[in-house]
Structures are given as structure tokens and as C-alpha cells.
Length: 471
Image: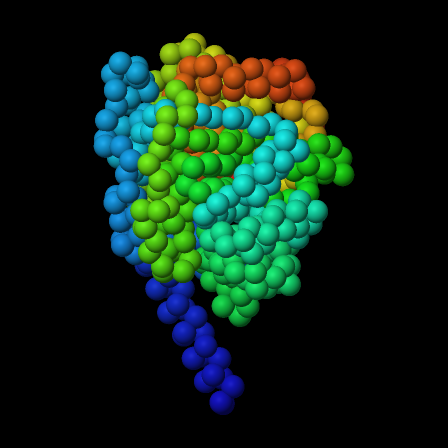
């Protein structure tokens, strides 16, 4: 009797929980197809479906997981007013710049110098050199920071500067940096470095936050030198994977845009520590270092708008000559697919470089499932053969995008990302040369041949695509 009553009570609690969850899901006014899919999962796969929804289904967007006070950093230390010079920018560029400003507060920054890296050895040499030459403060933030040869090398440099009195703050993603050993974290802290994990995931308190990761890569030295892009801190970026080298892209910046990287770091610092840091000493008066116009665009579940994706869509729809995309993961939302199809059908030269092999096989199969839609519109597809291409470059006419964001659901909707938009014809020419060098190491796919691929592969692709919103 007691067992029957207990069973009925548990069943009642579960039914109430599921119904409440479905009501909240409906109240979020998502895409109806996604909402119906989740409702079916909750009803027909009861326990697993509920746990899966708690982990990856709940949305943070519009919940303001960062207190509005943190936005004072972005509002209070702007180095430039909202101005988009007609003599330096064409209509296309001004349109992108205004959108980025309105949807994410991205300030347009002039007189910057940009150095592009496609070689990890040169990059890490310059990162180590910049750290060792720091005089005042270092702020460093990475999705992946491993306790391996490269990680140890960078940690040793940081500890050396901390001993010399340099103020150092460090943020690592708690999931991405799972291979950063606790003893190394303790050693960094013992040397006076402030270390924080982004959205900690600890048993038994795992919740939906595990699905929202900080994918940004930021390093700022003395408020004067900045690094950002696709490289993390790990051996794989120099030594590659067991089956081939790792191909990526990063930039070093000097000039007014460094303050925007600094602000982005301190917004994340406020997120993890609830400490508002807006001292003027972190924002030295910038001097002209070059001729590049730039913006730093952030996106994440804390913002109202999917800002990076919106900038891409606007650029694709207004392109006049070319769209060149290089991304390791191509799992785009329908809006991005449509924008690329419209561009290609409008005789814009649209090309996409993707990996032939990947560090995530399920994601690769899902990526391949989108190719038919691209082929039919006239998009040229290339598969990179010389190892794994992890580079995130997008070139639209004479404007370049580079940063941490992949061309997929997770980057656009769930991760905290950071991209640089570069309005510089000469610098875009340099990115374009890099792009066509990568094409030399790629095989162009023929649509007729692609259509004849085995049924077994098509089934794998279609099955993997079902998981594309969460990969």
C-alpha cells in the first residue's frame, strides 16, 4: 500500500514537472518546430528527455545572466563616439558597422595595426615575448588552456611576470580547459595570479549552464597589445593531431581597438567574479599604430541579439563581389543558409573551405549534410586535405571577419564568442591570399560526384544533422 502511494506521488510530481516544463517552453515563443520537437522528446522519452532538456534545452538568452552593471564598462570607457566616416567607409561597410554597434555596442576603432598568424610557432613565440615584456597588467582568457608543453610555457611566463609585480587576471572555460590540472591552477594562484573558471560545472550541481561555454580567446598586455582569433593554448596547435597538422588563424592588434578587447575581458571578469573593474589605468590613451578600421563584436546568451550572426547575414545579403568562408564546423541556421543561397543565386562568388577530416566526427557528418543546399545555389565547396582546418575567416568584398565564432548554431546562439571585423582593403587582400593558399591544399567537390556518395554516408549525415543545434 505504501509503495503504491509512493509510486503515485512520484508519478504525480513527474507529470507536474513535465507539464510545467512544457508550459515554460511554450511561453519562450521559440521557433515552433524546435518547440514541438522538445515537447515530443519530453513526452515520449520521459526521464532522459527531461534531463537532456535541463542540460541543453533551457535558454539563457534574454534572462540577463550578467547584471546590467557590467555594461557600464562598455559604456563608460569608449575611446570613440558613434561615428562612421563617409570618407573612409563605403555604404556596405557603414551598414555593417552601424549594425554591430546597435546590436552589441561594438565601437568603431581607427588607426590600428594588425598582424595575421597562420603559424602557431610564430604566434606562441610572440605571445610569450609580449607577456615577458609586460610592465603593468596582463588579462588572459581562453576556451582551452591545457597543462601540456605549450600551456606550461605560457604559465611559466605568466608566473615570472607575476613575481615581478605585474597584475595578472586569467579566465578559462571550465569545460574547455578540463585538461588544466588543479595543481597548475594552485601554482598560478600561489604566484599571485587571479584565476577564474567560467561557468563551473561541478557534480552534483550540473545544470543547463553546462551548455553555455565561453569560446572567446583574448590576451591583452598593458592595454596596448591584444591577441585574438582561433588558437587556444594547447600542444595540438603546434604539433597537430595524430593524423595531420592543425591549421588556424589569429591576429595581434595594436591601437585603439585594444581597449575594446580589454572591455570584453572585464565584462567576462564581472561575470565570473562580480567585480567591476573600470579603472582608467587599464585604458591608456591610444596612439596611432596603423591605418586599419576595426570593431570587436561579442555575442552570447546574455545578449538580446545574435549579433555576430546578424552581421554575417547583413554582409551576405549586401555582398557585391565575393563571399569566402573558412570554418571547421558548418551547421548554419536557416537564416544563414538562405542568405548564402540568395548571394550565390545573385551571381556572387561564394566559396566555402571545410575540413576533410575533423576532430569531431559527428559534427563533420552534420556539416556535410548541409552541402546539397549550398551546391544547388551554385556555392563552391572545398575540402581541406593538409590536416585539420580550424581557421575561422570570412571575407565579404573588401571586409574581413576573424575570431572565435564558427559558422554554426552553437557559436551563434549558445557560446560566448568574439569576432573582429576589419574594414581594410589591404588587410583583406592579405586574408584573401591566405584563403587561396588554403584552396591549394584543398580538393574542390564536384556536385555530380557528391550526389553519388554511398547511401550509408548519407544516412550518417542525416542522422548527425538531427543533433546540429546542440553540436
